[in-house]
Each structure stands twice: as structure tokens, then as C-alpha cells.
Figure 1 (cartoon, one colour):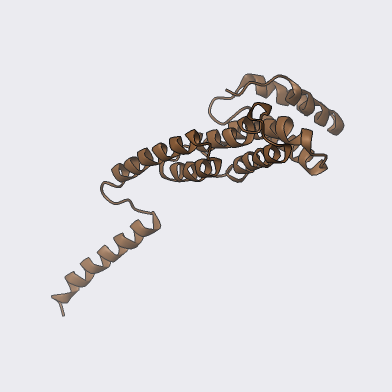
Figure 2 (cartoon, rainbow, N blue to C red):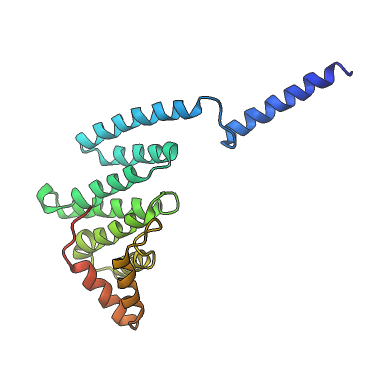
Length: 198
């Protein structure tokens, strides 16, 4: 009985480690290298999807890259390509198709706010997708309210959680000084200014 105790204890430890690795609570030796190699291959897939203008594939691969690396820049870029760039007049899409991709890009940005490591620039981009690509083709009051809400959240963030942008912090102070109707008009004025994506 005493001889079986150490082997049972070792088996219990091994089982605990296997369960922890499976749940993601513990990383296996060399897992970072494996994830890095997988990310490299996914970036190749992402570039191919971008070249082929396969935006759904770009979005799917971007989510995988973000899951493995924790970096959300690729997710934001895929949302920009699908939601802002591809819906531009220069792409010569039908109005319905352009609107579909704009709504898709905005949805990608909104649905992933809690998982992106830098969500605030994505909020700004989502607001501009609404303003430039969705609102001109939709009379929905809900679309307008969603756009105003997203931009107000971006203003409240000061431009992001890293280094606070003093320009957007000042804009937010000006926004807070206004009444409700004035705030909506203030945001619409900001969104109608010429905007060049960074």
C-alpha cells in the first residue's frame, strides 16, 4: 500500500497538469514557440486573404491571431478593410453590398471591444464607419443613436487607455458642458469633419 502511494501521487500531479494545460491555466514547455510559429502562418493566411479581398477570411484569421498573440491590430485592420475601405465609392460596389460590408466591419469592432487589447481606436473607427458609410444609406434612428453612443464612449476614453490624447480629452470636456441635444449636434459636427484614418 505504501509503495502505491507515491505513484498515485505522481499520477495525480500529472493529471492536474494535463487538465490545467487543457484549460489554459498552465502552459506546456515550448508552447510560446509553437504559438509564435502558428501566428506566423496565420499572418501568411491573413495576407493571402487580404490580397484576394476575402474579408470574411481576414476577419476569421484575425480573431485567431488575436487569440494566440493578444494583439488586436490585425482585427482592427480587417474591420477597416471590410467596413471602411471596401465600401468606398472607388470600389464600385452596389449600394447594398457596400452597406453590408460597412455594417459587417462596424459589427466586428463592436463585438470585440472586450477582447481587443486596444479597443479605443476601434471605437473611433466604428463611429466613422457609421458616419461615412452607414448613416448616409440608412434612415434608422437606432443607427444614429449607436453612432453617437460609440463616439461618446471614445471621447470619454480620452482617445485610449495608453497615453491620453489631450485633444480628445478637451473635446470630451466641451461635450460634457453641453445639454443632451447640443451633445448630439456636437458629435455630428466632429464626425462630419474631414477624417483620415491613421
